[in-house]
Length: 323
Image 1 (cartoon, helix red, strand yellow):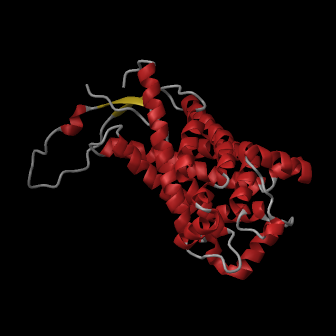
Image 2: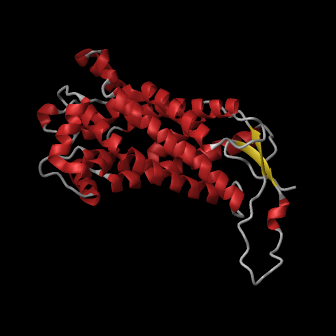
Image 3: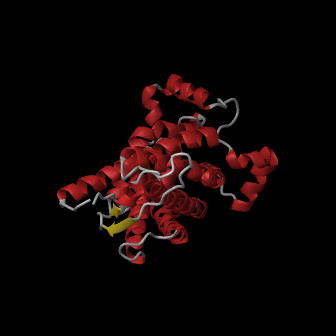
């Protein structure tokens, strides 16, 4: 019997789904394949490792997104204009400003959110059954919240390093790398600076996880169940692309607020900040930078899950686990 792995393990597909249509003149109904799920305890750090690899690929897009969200004055308004402005002023290397902080963030935030999510999913899903969408949303939101708390300090440094070159010379912070940024923040602003914007960031992390991880697992199971696709790279690509679209749309408003709070030089309440943004920019502020956000998050989501599935495939091969 041929087998197809589940989103977190492996499973068998009933061969009845491959039977020919007995009435060629009648449009066949969408046939549902029976998938038997198998739980596999993957290492906790797989998500952080995969996300770090993805960050190395997509960091320039993340940098452009932050610059657009925080633009002021006569700064370029388009993604291509911002991209070219960075290259002209800082050279190609400028596209990787803040990469060390981004990697530090992935090694904290993503390791926790992926690791906790996969562990809880195994614990709350009976062997051989598919987890329901409400359960996936609940587990992914909780793990995303924990990840946001764990990675907040690195996220603050990441946003600041990406924005630093666009600031006036007198306002630049000149962090050499992620750890240097953490140390300077603690010395000059106190340890409380590590938790600056922690609640909008954690809220965004919970929304991101719920919309990204839960939707990826859901889309993947749907493609494996209702299409001829198995647990293939095509399935992973399509599922992650759809998950990236969902995540970008849901997280865009919180993402804008998070960037504004973390880059601010003055302490301002969350409600007063939202009120100020709304009075200046109207309701469109909620989706400011959506296109570059999707062009960044889409490839980042695709790369993350492709790397993650490669980790899983290698693990199953090393452990000689049947697929």
